[in-house]
Image 1 (cartoon, rainbow, N blue to C red):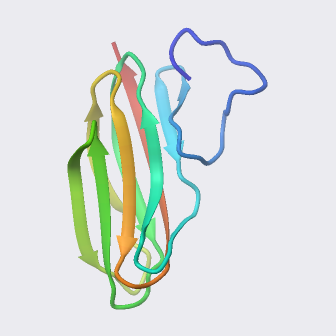
Image 2 (tube, rainbow, N blue to C red):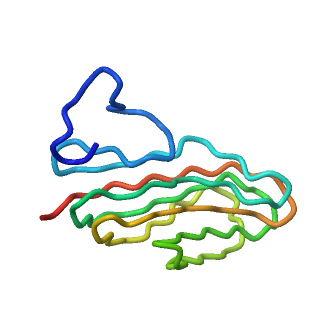
Length: 130
C-alpha cells in the first residue's frame, strides 16, 4: 500500500497475488503457485511501484524435473532486465536477483519452459527509501 494510505479491512496484509504490498518501509509480493502450460508463459508478478525508490530481491523457484529449459524474464518499464535461462535441475533451486526500482516503475515477471507444464513461484521483498 503506498505511503499515506491508511489500513482498512480490504487491504491485503499477507497473501499471494500479482500486486506489491507495503508495510511501513517494507514491501513484498508473493505470486503463489503459477502454472505455465504447454510451453506458454506464466505471469508471476505484475505491479507498479509507488513514489519511493525500492531496493530488494526477486526470488524464483520451479518444480520442473525434466530436461526442459526454464526461462525467467523480468521487465522494468517494458525493458527486459532479466532473461535467465537454465536447464531444469533434479531438485527445486531458488534463483535470487537483486533489483532496484525507481519511483513509479512498472514491473512484470514471467516464466516458461519449452513444451511442458511447470509450476513456478516468485516473490519480491524489499525496502523503500526516500
